[in-house]
Every structure is written in C-alpha cells, then in structure tokens.
Length: 308
Image 1 (cartoon, rainbow, N blue to C red):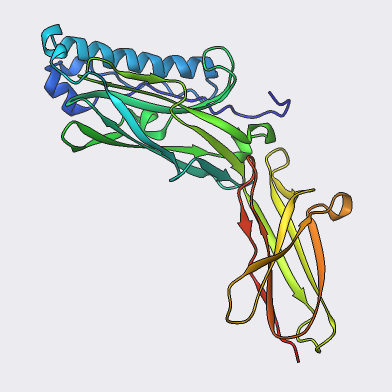
Image 2 (cartoon, rainbow, N blue to C red):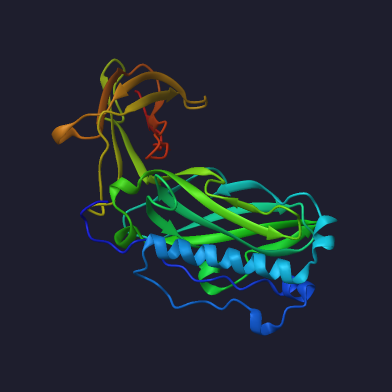
C-alpha cells in the first residue's frame, strides 16, 4: 500500500433480505438481517466478512424456506450474466469530485431470490491480499439491489461512490475485480471472487490549439496539444509523458483521419506534443489518445484554421 494517508474504501453493512424472498420463505420479520454500524475505517478483511455474513444469512433463509425435495425440483444452478461497470469494463475518476460507479448484473435459474451482492476489490487474493474492498450504497443501506424482470430472472443494479481525495492513490489505478454472490432456490448458488475484471482509470484530458489563425497560404501552422491525467497522490492534473497521441486532420466538411503519430514530451514539456504543417487550404486539426489500462482514451476538440 502507498504510504500516503487515506480512508480505505472498505465500509460495509449487511444486506436486508428482499421482502419478496421473505414472504416466499415464510420467515418472520425478526430474521431480517439488519445493517451493522457504519465502518468508515473498517479494514478490507472486516468488510469482506460483512459480505460473507450476508451471503450466509441468505443461504440460511433458503434452507429454512425450501425443504430438500423442493430444492431438488428447482433449477440446477443459478447463473449470473451481463456483469458490467458503467456500461462496460472500466470507470474513471478525476481529482476532486466524488464519482458514482454503477455495476449491473442479471441472475437467472431460480424462481426465488434470497439475496445477491457485488463488491469491488483490488489485490492479489480476496481472502489474504485484498488492498481495497468496496461495498455498494445499497448494501450499506440494507436495500434491495435486484428486481424481478422475468420468469426466474432478476436484474440487479448497485452504485458505489468514490471520493478520490479520501480513497485513492495512484497505485489504485488499473485492474480491479468484482466479488459477486447470488442465492436463489436453485440447487447451486453463485459465489465468485471474479465475476468481472474491470479497470479503474485516472481521468484524462487533452488540449489542442492550431495557430496562428487566420494564416497566409504557404506559412507554417503549429498544432500544440497537452495530454494530462489525474494524479491521485497530489489531487492535481499532470502531463502524461511518453504516450502515443495521433494527429488527425480533416477538411471543413470532411471526417477526421490520422495523419501521423507522436510521443508526448517529458520534463518541463511533460505531456506536450507540437507539430507543424504548411497552410494550403482551410483545415481542422486535433490530437487523439487511445488510452491505457490506467488511463481512459480522450480526443481533443478540433481547431480549424482559416487560410487566406
């Protein structure tokens, strides 16, 4: 872990079993799993225990509601599919604003859902090497994350709030995983440490300016850009050095196309790229960055030059 002080993303509370599942099971209200005390300083190990305890409670509700003969007639196994983070497999966070990350998944293979939870974590091993562990706003509040969306099918949504100034350092950028469990009346439940590998990325921005303008035909146009990304150690943006950016051009009515690729500068020119072109006709220019495992792609706003 970084030596920078921070509040770890490890808070968690136990989930409240869905009202529908309780009604189906015939469980008394007294068996509801109530939220535990908020744990702003809870360790990753303790937060993980909270999630596992909620899974165990859901399994107990399943056993209490369904005799073995009934379970045997249920689906063979629960299935989780369609897991996504912000609609894909990555999320981005800047330097100051709290960012909300949304995770969605679908559960099928069981007519009754007793509980499900998805947690975000980073590290080598969930039980022994979790560096970060984050439970959702819904889990913390003891609220249902899943709604029935068809016959033996549930759609689930969970949200997670990340404050970069409290939670993150630069080492947190890169690959994370989703720990996910689901308990239904199927014979086999879902319990996986890696329902999806996703990437938490440092927000990027890319400036662009073509000058001078207007310009006389035959003169030199200079296209200057700067690629920056969020620094979670300093909470500022800094030039992203030695990265490939593509210079793209188009006519006033055409489409952008890459004309050359370049490496951003270092030192006092960190993240800077500068190219020249001869002015021949009115033309638009922009830089484009394809992204990395720690930094999202970004395309600069084009700048059109009036050639006279």
